[in-house]
Length: 408
Image (cartoon, rainbow, N blue to C red):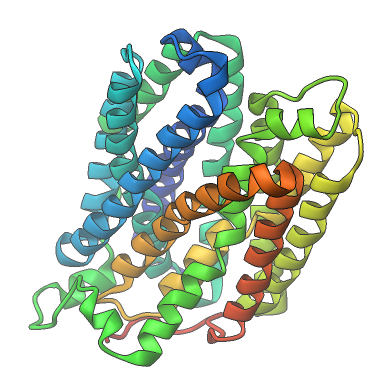
């Protein structure tokens, strides 16, 4: 970025910094529940026999919140600005995080996970939109790489805090980090592209602009489908890694905290690799296809390695994480498919519909599990998700170095 003016570099740096740190706290909170699921449920008196079912309930409440929040924040981002979504979402999930540390029963816990989900829904899409619109078009992938690499390290910190401290303290830490980020008042500016259309008589922030044309609707659904394998891995394989460890006959049952930590170390590495590969190949789609293929391979390794040691199991989690490292690239592709007047709506709703897909995926998983077992039910769902994602990728346009300064 040496050829850019100092003012341009400051705008870009501010956008990347607030998006990256906001995503760090976002991922911390999003993943923390999976880490402290067992400890927190036991802490409020849930019996062992109900830990899985109550855990699925709370996860689904969080995901329902993210579905609703994705729509609300996305529309707000196109109507009022990307920066306001970043700051508002950070505030909401930080307050909800602190409140989670005071829960005493499942209904209150579920309500707060729903509120946290609404808050968590806005940060990534608004951040990627802001960075994509601020960066030179030839270098966009590098900006989103920084956001993703810094952001996913929040999961590593969540795993460490969740293991070292009481689960209530872990929630307080997450809330305090978010409030601290807001108090820093990072000097980020609104997107210039958004500012250019803000005063124009252009309809902004409407899902109808997506669904009123068949090509746009087709692109939108394909953007969702290419991301579903990622949250199958996180929402099923990693979240319920202790249950999978038992079914695989492991002598040492893995902990969700360690599985998540190794997976997100892998995602951080994969985020860097996928962004660099996208720039090197000058193709978003080729990079995505490579990582999707790796995802399928490592899902098979996770499910069908008989009696793995704990060390081998965590290495497979690390490799799964690397293969899932195209998350920020996937959101970038979604943002690049649509015009400035609905870009935040798309970039915010798409990842949250992907996260929300965990609900039908987990329900299908629970439905199949009594009949064909935990391993084979996960295999059926996982390979279907990967296959559908490959099919959806073929229906998207290549967007590397695409000019984003247009409206629908």
